[in-house]
Amino acid sequence: MLAETICSAASAAGLGIAAVTAYRKRFLTAARIAAYSLVPIGLVLTGVVEWLAGIAFKPSVWLGFGVLGVAWLLFMTTRAIERRGGGSRKERKAAARAAQGDAVAPTASAPTLGAGAPAGRTRPQPKKQAASAEQGEDFDDIEAILKKHGI
Image (cartoon, rainbow, N blue to C red):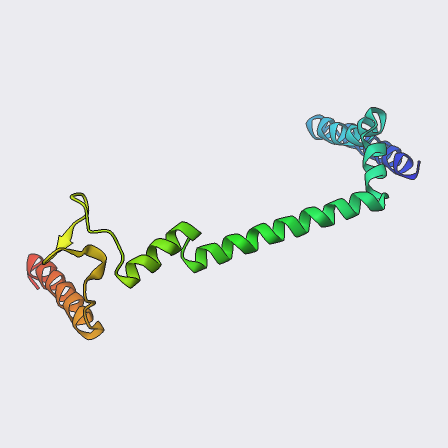
């Protein structure tokens, strides 16, 4: 009852402002204000306000929202842990087998390095060598650009 009264008062006030705006010869703005002010009374007449008020004041509805929030929190937490941990259970088992050396020999589609070693088993370059190689390439590019412009 209180919500319907507030919506009706808001609509009446909006229509009053629209009338004053129309009196000042701003008809487009007045029509827009009138449209906005008719929305609350339309919601009251369709029963939406009563439905929303019924939802807002029922403890069981708020308990349901709480349960949905907990479900969402659990879902997002498990997704974050899964992404951080390296994927699904199947992927972790395959990675564990590969680490123990029980992995299946590479197939024709898998690239090999050397005497049949899987592609993932290469020795990493030391960081200093990789960084200096990248810097050398960058300087070569810069030198080529400078020579192109005659500098």
